[in-house]
Image (cartoon, rainbow, N blue to C red):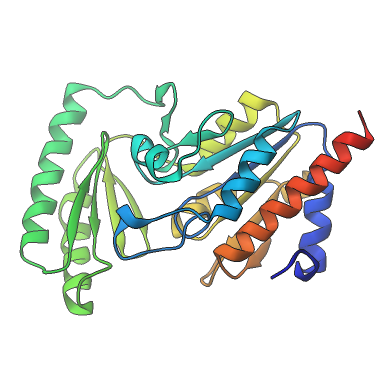
Length: 263
């Protein structure tokens, strides 16, 4: 999709958002800035998206954020993005200043039990794997046969996911069990307040991004964009990571023009 191919209604919404006094431009990472891949460590960002994000971050009164389910340190390493871009990890709970909720010894003990149980499940289902983060453990099943994938997920859902104090987040071929509350929607609230944003644009492709969409207000100028297929509450939809780059480039260019005209 070229800039001229952006659907009319989405184009108008983006133009309006690009012309507010203070704008927050934000996106998920995997499936948006980077394509989904079988090995999470191979998720390289689209260079066009990176260039647009960095250019937007250099503009006056414009904040840019990437809100990901990944651990913050891993997100920083994979994306290569740095200040002034704000990175938020662990589904909105891990900011550059630390976690939104203090992690106690009780949390760590529970996380150890969760991790042990998920590793037991993964050991019995080829193609599944466990990723550990500071406040959660993640069962990945993307590379497993369908039967193994579904059985492993169901064992996680009926086992450690039901334990007291466990926060469950399901995504594409993944279930994450956290010991603190996580929400990309709450993260957007924090970012909006931190930057004093008059409008927020957010792009997301996964089930976890629905929490972010739910915290946006289209009636006051926010723009929610679903990337790819699947049910969504987002106001607009685009197809893939190339379309994400197009949207980011369009917003950045229109924002730069508006700021120059109103300097």
